[in-house]
Image 1 (cartoon, protein in one colour):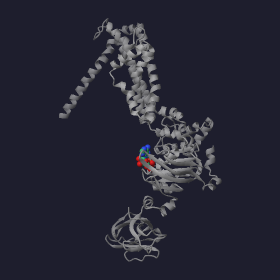
Image 2: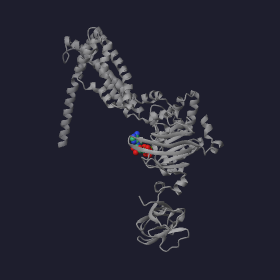
Image 3: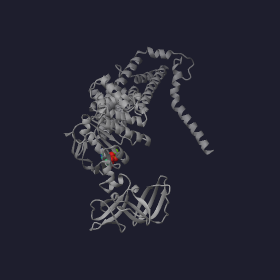
Image 4: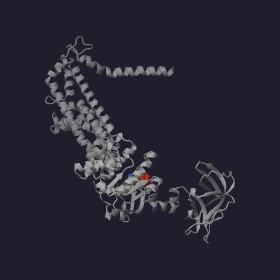
Length: 372
Length: 264
Ligand SMILES: Nc1ncnc2c1ncn2[C@@H]1O[C@H](COP(=O)(O)OP(=O)(O)O)[C@@H](O)[C@H]1O
Ligand SMILES: [Mg+2]
């Protein structure tokens, strides 16, 4: 019943969006001698869904388990709504955790699984029945309530796990790669479903994933992690358009990488050819990056519009992929990948031909330091 | 050609081995229906008289009930002690955990006769000889290591994330144990129980040191009987023992099948 109330997002809830809900302050985790998380600080706002995005082994699960209380951080402070919960036992934390393996109770039916958290809270039998029913309807599993988990498909188990975590109306929902064991089609469906459930209930959520598409498409903000620290924390747009580090640029979306130099005069150049970029530039060796689909392939002497960069190079490979042409162009020591949509009249340049690659000055990303 | 010959030879070998192993057991069945006065094969006449004799033998029946009660109590105690002990050994992290586990399961390797003597010496000074309490304690020494080993392995292979899920859902650690850990351990518990029951019910060597005219178990009573008399009644008793053992194994098989189904 309370579930229904929460499912219609109230205006007051949306108004409070800016308030910090889950706060990690200099949280660290050391296993034996392995300093898995040196120091992590971040704040998740009430009602938003934040992705922890990073390659496997970067400490996402470890961080999530510290938040849930399944492991105690070696250092730092975790608080929820300004209440310090660092030392609070798991069962008093009021957090819903959806495991990567779902972790459904194999000896209980679907409805017993979902009812478990409510029973632990000492809620009356009658109310439990109603809330379990509502929760199972919400994930469209009402008809399977008497099945054992092993008699369900992966996607159905996933939805039971979700219903079980949500039915107790936890203060925070934690999801550890919940879609990684599903096939591609189901993954797309569940992406939409999880996001809409989260938005309807207005619950604060942390979504762990190594899949940039999930992070970009589902979450309000993204924490990009690497080796136990935060590379960048921002909205999907910020992360994609203004990556803070070369790692973020290449981990979120694909990118080209050119080595270049910023002269003391402020002039940016790669392979001896001058380039335009927006914003302040770091003097010295730099890495220049741009997304393949933002780069156009032109004939050698074709006109380049003002405000666009142009680099001359030699065509080393070209692949026609139907709706796309992928081309590789060698510029000095580096190779640039170009992806552009095909047109009926597209004439493919010949291999080895002199060509020009061109992109908008604003699409140029410049990072201090040489290539790593 | 070569392979064919080998497989034919293998088949023969396996058959011979099987007959060698099972023949004495199978022979017991016809002999138990013998009408003869003495134990011989093949019997010259058929009857149920040895089954009747068995059920008229007060000592034998008393020993059977003793064995049954003993095995039952030993099984329950093995589980009551074994489950928490296995939990501590598998789940708690402390120094000397492996040592503890090895010590607990060590009697499995000790010659039973040595164990029997040791128990005799200790029990004599505590007045535990020829008492039910003494038999229970002695059988526990043998059955606990089995129980502990089976339970520890089941517990160690159990998926911990279910327990963690229960905790995040607000279950206190004790509720987690009774609502999640224990039910998920059910197949291990059934297996351990069956093994403890059979180990206790079949135990002869150590029991021989501890029994007397006042109290005796079925295997010991049978042993004594055969020592003095050579009539087919022991065959009738053997048949019933075989059927009981098969019954227990069948129960385990069904429970384990169900148990395994629980745990995917
Ligand atoms: N209990 C543990 N003991 C020792 N090392 C661990 C433990 N848990 C995780 N690690 C290590 O911490 C690192 C981060 O792991 P994890 O948080 O699972 O990464 P992710 O979820 O991002 O893939 C890995 O190198 C892993 O080996
Ligand atoms: Mg992980």
